[in-house]
Length: 134
Image 1 (cartoon, rainbow, N blue to C red):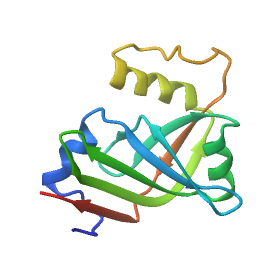
Image 2: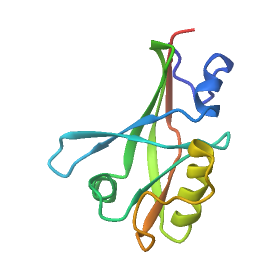
Image 3: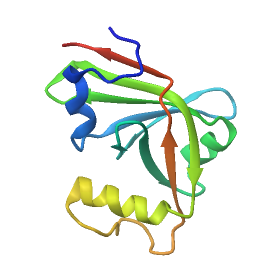
């Protein structure tokens, strides 16, 4: 196991591929909540998105600290977990969900929700990175 702020080369492919990540948040009553999300990584920060008003958005408003786990689809005992604070940005939310849609589906426009839905881009700044498996 590693607990550094660098993603080891052995696990870099997990953040470079369009895999689903499990986003863990803390609800206002202190209980955990986990949701699969699309994500991207620029070498420094992780980015993901949700619609304004959803449970995970409300949870992150109250407690802006999350865990993001990406599991190797070929080996469930191999994963990377990133924990850290998040910041929200509505002004680029729609552009971000379109970019994530391109990454995951090949379509340049996200059409899975209403066109007037307010989207929020979240930026996760890693404070802890843990990997398991080689």
